Length: 431
Image (cartoon, rainbow, N blue to C red; front, side, top):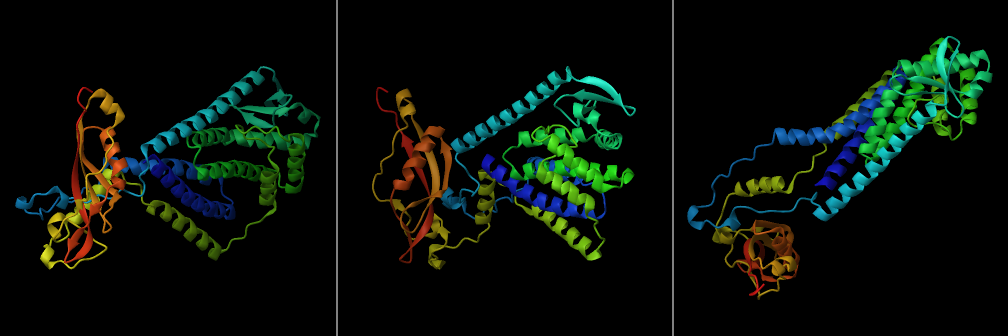
């Protein structure tokens, strides 16, 4: 079930990402803040699968009651339920391994996060306070320009900024002040935690990367409103990127950026988006369609729920006797619908669970499954009805694929039939 839930989360996350891409372009045309588009996309991608599962738990779909199609005189459980294993089902061993890997990766990412915070706090002791152009800043030897911390948010500048001209210093200070005013460190903190908690979701990592770019683009837009000379501002960004190559902090909004992201920022500065009604309509339709696609993805069902739904569907099927039935190779029949029921060809080998044998414990498993036209058990339809323990059930499930049956017959034609079989485990004497 955990693997199915993860796949469901990834698929819906990709759909929400497509919607966010369209919404991001829409915001860019309208010169609106783009960071909130990606922040909302991350939150929805994370919460939507949990909301869907919680909604199913709190407001379950009521299964239709059985109609009582089968007479009490022929009360045979074979005719009441048919089970097929859902496509989402995964071995519990694989599920445990997936959860273990998830936990290990999350623990590693959170450890990195904690180490980064510890490193910054240790470095803060070496930073000196200074007032530049009327703004209180912290001067560091190998950090910044960046806004670091949450409360308070320190504006950190490297030593070499003090040697720059006053216009350049004003731009740097204005950029970092805009980050602090917009509380961008909080957005980055939440994005870091979400990717650490769900590291297996590639859509979430893509959204986090786009969020960081959008935060810087939005900040550049606010700075250029008061300093409209984008060419000088772009040259300043390139200069800072050269000085800070390899030193950018991932946990703090900073003026410096990687080359690919820097190119996006400069392109956003010099590109003037033109208003086009047709383009806006297309983007709106694309965003809405992607969001609707994410909402339409069917959540994974538990095996019990899937079994109940299929059982109800079978129960609502009108019952006909073997004399009135025309054999259909694609159908599965009940015992009272066939002229000759399926039976085991000969006693089959069934291994006693070693742990139960050593303990001297006996038990019984009553299971139902479909025997196909070739006389083989269809393991996808295997369902234990009663069991004395999971060890006994596992032994039956392991042995059943090797069993051979004489298939059921209707009017001389072999057909598939749902059967019920009891497996008795008797402890050896003196065990």
